[in-house]
Image 1 (cartoon, rainbow, N blue to C red):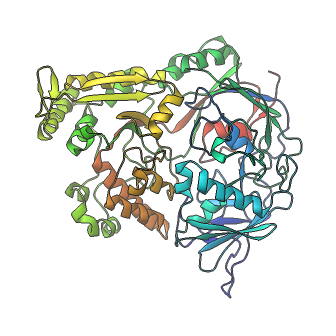
Image 2 (cartoon, rainbow, N blue to C red):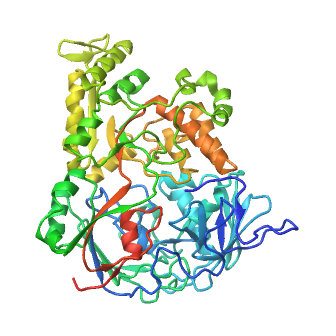
Length: 599
């Protein structure tokens, strides 16, 4: 999601008379990189040959799947379905932020009062069954997602009042408030046919192939094990500027592996073509050998400009042991990042320091005058420390040490009513401090175990549990956890998604991204300030103020980040000369690469 108030539609969207004009793009920053009539994005090869086959492994933590519906709450959607089969009214580019260009919509128009956004559909847009995309389909998609979609989807679209059909090719989204990110959110509504699952409740659509507009069709699948897509020979969007030079493979195949070890060995054995490696140890020690030396497999660190966001051990504040901020701060002191980086990560990482890490939005030093304008009215609700320096993560390099940090942690526990006696950290009632850490990645176990070792030195009884993705997902959706390792994703321009992550209203909404159960009126007001910012300067100030408050709450034990994607691939692909600024490696491979040699 993107954000900004006083968005300016491109190509003179507002005329001298004040009436809005339709445009090919919409930007919250005032100017789009690509003018009307542009042919393609700079980071694609418009002449890339079509054809060939791409073999991939499951791209994320999911080790299985049981449905093709990526928008329903229950179950695990198959890899590739969402980005290969579904499209939206407009799409962002990967070399600028908060700007969208027409995809299913050929143009868009913001009302003069900024309380609605109108999209006119491209007359060439067709579903994969051959039916034209109509305004009624757009309305059906929106209404269905709001009524029956997953909780996170409902929260995302909560500030859109309604979708109105103007005529067969024109649809208008009316907004509940002057939240100027809403035009971008409306442009991001995924569209599917009214015929998809027509005789089935939406949340019960499982293995019925989507009737959508994307460039690929499901060719074959083995539930939970593999899925293959083939390019739709009648795909409607090849000449749309936002699609030219993209999605070049004739077939894309996913094979699901149960753990990272099996996946790595399968890659070396030639079972699939590209792997994005998240383990520093594997990258340093396992991607070696004759195939790498001969050039058969390429090992490449690909730079990006993504904000790193927050990744860490996340605490569930719904659980009583985490409700005291001194406890949460003490748990952070037990993480020895410097030892991990030296012994486990081969010096490939830096410590995460912000919820808007690696970006201009991160809080540093003491609050600026603009931040104080937002913080001062909330002073009575905030920790006084918020008005001092932003928290700095503890270190164990001299003159500091792990021992000194653990001594400080013990003191904090004592202040919070926990002392070590009878072989455990106990409260006044004699109850031991227990902690379950859940995760679905076997590769994380050795990292978690290092943290656990330090927690045990404090007298904490830790149960480290690794389970499969589906079980962990269900537990997270039900908020049935105490601590887990999680990456919240990066922000280039934060907006409405913050309501889902931090607002009080989302804390009790099962399936929301407010995994902490955070309920804080001050945080609610600062989230609203971020979403309501009217300039980049306002956005920076509001984001830093929010970041500052979240950091002082110590709701996460921050992990580490890298400024590159670690990608290994077989030497049979063409890659565009220009690399985008903001991208995820998996999507970049699928959407812009092409085949140059046989498998």
